[in-house]
Length: 330
Image 1 (cartoon, rainbow, N blue to C red):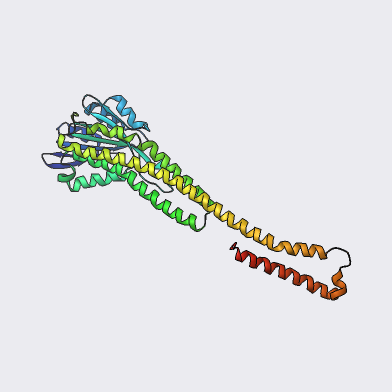
Image 2: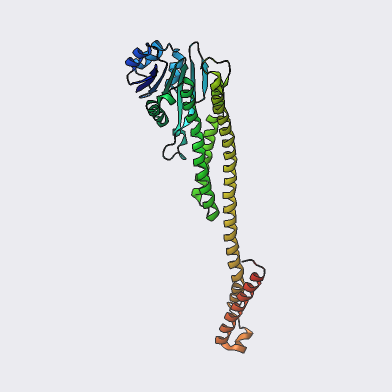
């Protein structure tokens, strides 16, 4: 699926067919943004012709759009720059299957045009496209402004994901401190996998964005360089935040292990107290369980000896409870 929006002498036009877009591009609009959503992971014939014939893109760049790069890149060609950047669009069960939430956005940038190509349906591009139609004087006032808005949304997706992680970690910490469960360990490991996956794609993103911070590139005017430096700084800050979250999840794992240990200690303490309290009962019952004549029989008689033994057990138990209480063992 292809759609385009372009500005010619302040007049905004939208098109949804590759052949019509190719014809309109020959009229040299001031700025044009073409968005291509790959269906079945492949370009249609007319879309391929648009990229290869109308824009003269190198076949290797077009091929890179069809196969995930996994690592960001920015390649400079004679009349355009081709890049691949990665963002996060969260899906259901993203903590368990986070890799499915990572998307790749391929982008061609040249004098007066921006072309985005992607396999996933990216909702933020839909929103930007609608904003460009509604407020062209803001969204389409320059190529730099359009490009900055796209990159800013990609990098901001990391921040949104980190907020989700923070919320989940706070919830987990409360649950662990209240009563640790086996499910908590699984959730902590899921968060750890998410942070590792984010770290893997975020660390190398800066290398892609740094191209647009150079003062000698032919695409970005000097007054807009500060905007792309902001993108670069924001990306660096995200990397630092991810490192901090990776340390936090290790700490959360330690909290879980400590909580489990404390809980196990309390259980063992309780069982030990019960066993210790019942020890006199076992000794006394074992003593009177021997098949011999006891002196107590001649003093208290057969029935009285039973009451004597039971009283002795009760006194022993109460004495031990009083002793344990004084020692503050429970």
